[in-house]
Image (cartoon, rainbow, N blue to C red; front, side, top):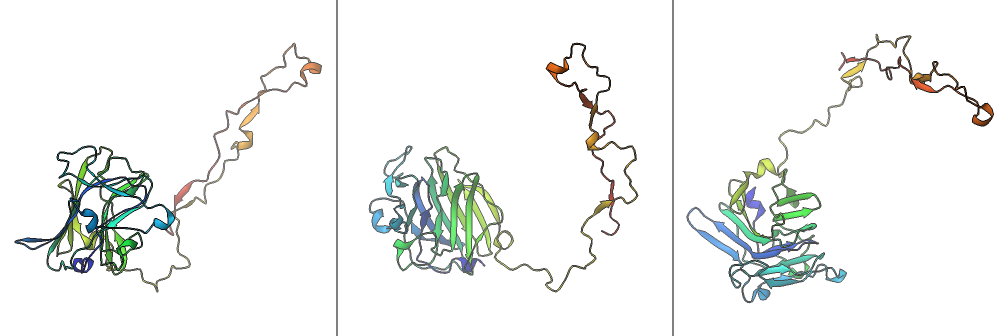
Length: 308
């Protein structure tokens, strides 16, 4: 299975959806590793000349919602030169940027996708994830409709927060059955995202070098057809009983049961006040009171259905 996910590149390397504000450093480093040594297919630290290595997406230019990128270190850094990255420079915009690398195959090899991201503002709805996929004829068209092999990274919209890991398999983008934890929690610090894809179709995900997931693509993504399916020729019998409980046919409402319309009764102990004036006060009526004999609405007893 894994061999089909990343068969070839060059690729797009990164895209951020709308309303995202993120500080991005060491955007993506790709490795196709053997047991003894590793080869780096793509690495970027956003030093001098990064603009010439990356292509800005024009996918949303015609709508006027495309955002601008700028080189920056952000609020906190140790070394201003080494810690520089690219940053989304506007709020409530679509951001996309991509770069290519030589074609490769990860057959019989371990692939590592790794990058670092920092959110200096809380994101209301958006993501800061990497997309790796096949070569594009025009990188300026990079956007949501663009096919990809892997999508990996944090995503949030309202109360839904997760780290995405999506694999494209036979033309379908397949989400993980259970979400990975979201680590961008308003503290404004950098987080290191690492995906390790192994030849045996197992995956390991680390955030800040802490394992958050390790498991099988076969088990945790619906990439393969199930071993068993419902028999299309099997039909529900006409006399099939769906209800496990039924009304007790022997249970009868007591003859002296007080119904809802008798929940309140006239207070027969009440007396018309001596100073009541019918002409001024109107006709006197005895007040109502709760009926002590009322025990609530009657329901027939329920019993187990022997036909169920």
